[in-house]
Image (cartoon, rainbow, N blue to C red; front, side, top):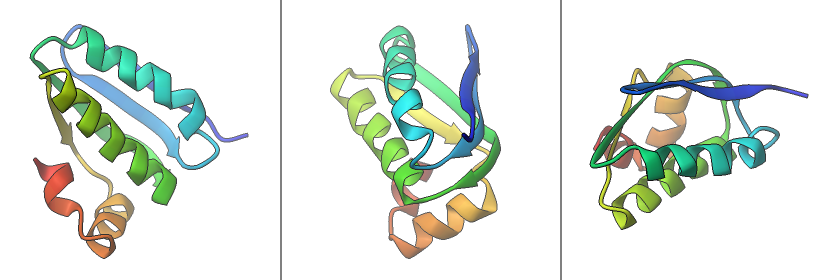
Length: 98
């Protein structure tokens, strides 16, 4: 099974591994907890993401919505090329670039 994890803190967090339908369930709660503990602002570095699919993109959008609900400014940095392409096809690049 593919693996993914969120590490770091305090300060910027890093997402690494595969951001796919196989890993979204394990990341969902971890990401929401990080947002809850992130305070007013949180940065998530995606440089370590090796592969992403539409489920992974949906998770990133969900986290943005959850962060806004909690009044946390969530920012993604170092989006991998395949995730940028997928976001472009889905016309959500502006959401991820905040």
